[in-house]
Image 1 (cartoon, one colour):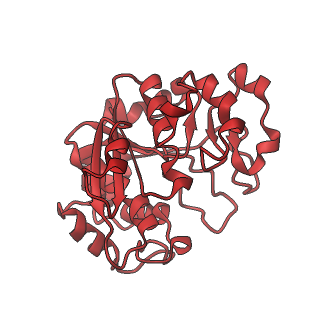
Image 2 (tube, rainbow, N blue to C red):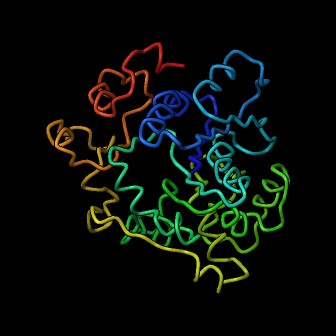
Length: 279
């Protein structure tokens, strides 16, 4: 199985690369962790070489003129899912921790066994203006399914980005990665690919929409069994040690809040040595 994420050099996100890589290799030792790097550095640059030690496969992409680098970084992981034939690929956030791997594996069974496209958290946006979208993290499918949905014409990386910057009849106008970072949503882009796909019979037969049982009601966009950076004061270390939490959206950047995050790092049983966890 391929775990796929991406980052630019913004430390809000890039600071998580070492710990998240080590986490996934601890949770799923046989997985292949794919990282996309977006920036101006060459592959032999010391920073990029350091990044390469925290993934199984590093893809380096230069910043595309006219596209906000952060938007390019978020979207690149989606493109990377299309490169691995029939291998199952899961998109993950570089700044998110998984605390219960059995929960995750159980939810993506249709992708692992039935070649389905599985998206998780369809109730996340109920009672909000964003209903119909779902979180990008944990979306999982065989690579050839991803490709049929988001890049059926087998466009190159650059050509694919140029294409998605000019999509006709957008749903909410946030699909375009050339927008300002605050006005782009990779979730909107993926929804567009699914809803506007010319073969809706294929989509209907392939797309498995899963709700999170712990999603809190009334559109608050919070999960009861998630440690959430927006409500850090509610984090209960005893509940974590009892196995209550499923995942975490930690305080960021990682290095700045390391001391606050250390109990979770220790719970995940990855190294707590700063030398091993800091870029």
